[in-house]
Image (cartoon, rainbow, N blue to C red; front, side, top):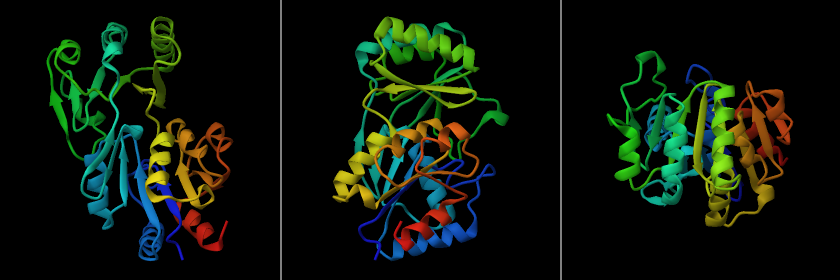
Length: 263
């Protein structure tokens, strides 16, 4: 019944609530959906290690795992795809981003590279994949071959200054620049977005778009909304995000109910 349907869910604020928990009703509906042949995919800005942690904790596995906002895609056993920031942009990005003096971390395919340990109260990862690099700016410039994301912590006005400098020097179409929370900015390849990752999964599974459902709550999820007529803003999504989705649902379980009803 569900073998031709795909559900793609963001993690924080969508599949999980603010406390990192999923309601039991939604969890059981996800499991039933998968048992009925449905395709279920987690798509998040987190590292792949965090997706696997949540899968183990909840007792189910998604058919594909999209991590780092679409930069890395795995199936249940092997890596399928990853996209790094073009090396020709690294020197300029390093100078601009590290030059503002804000805490900046850089990810590669498997790890987060930290300039120093995080304050324990600021640790959001479920699984610590971090490596401390004392001179991170030089390491990224001279040694790191596969940088996927710059993650900078600060405030909106500071992020706007970074955006303006990057676009002035590299152009508006060089890289993606996204506020992933009120206090975090991510910069990654222009070839990367959650939406583009979902497109790849649709092609892999050879599904029709009207049978694809996406759910999210933040700016980084909006690109997923545009690949299907069945996009949902969920939980505490702000009005600006809800306006860009086709529908609103309180939680993922409600979306699955709609899928079974044939919406």
